Structure formats: C-alpha cells, structure tokens
Image 1 (cartoon, rainbow, N blue to C red):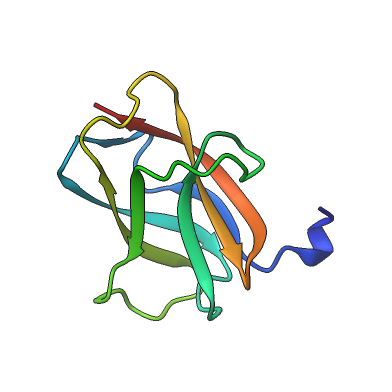
Image 2: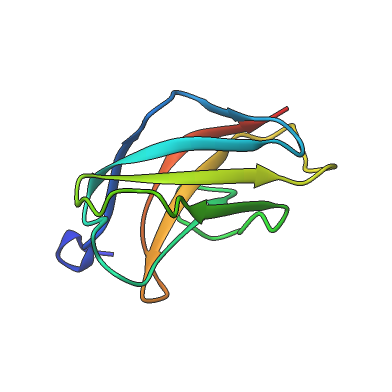
Length: 108
C-alpha cells in the first residue's frame, strides 16, 4: 500500500513490548497520527501486514479516551489459552482497509 492511502499510522506503542496476561485487561496507547478518524478498528495480527487476525485477543477503544489525532487509548484482552509463543502486532484498519501495524505484543 502506498503511503498516500495511509490515513492512520501507528508510529509506536506506549510500552515496548506490550505484555498482556490471560484473562486480564491490558490498557495501552497507540501513538502516531490519524486516530481521530471515525471507523477505526484496532486488532492483534500475526504479522506486520495486518493479516492473520488473532481472534483470541480482543482490542477495544477505551470509551474514556480523549478524541485526539496523535494517540489512541485501547484495552486488550487475551482469552485463556491464547498462544503465548509468537510475538504479535497491533494493527489498525480504517473503513475496513488495513492502515498500519506495530510490534511487539506478547501474551503470558
């Protein structure tokens, strides 16, 4: 995808790596640009290209998050039994189209 089509970009995560434990909510922030866009979906991916969605990890936008373009507060929740071995990527879609991903997200 060319950079001209990217409206939402994750430049970094508030923690490196983001570490989540089974069954425990994990709040963290995405830092970058374009987060005030509507129709954003945040999810965990198996790779930097945003494909291979990890269905056992849900990511919700924090309802108390300020409406800011430069950062987005989210809460991840890894279900019991989520594979702990690989490193994952935090990814963003806008209107259903992949925009950006940044690693590393780990599950313990």
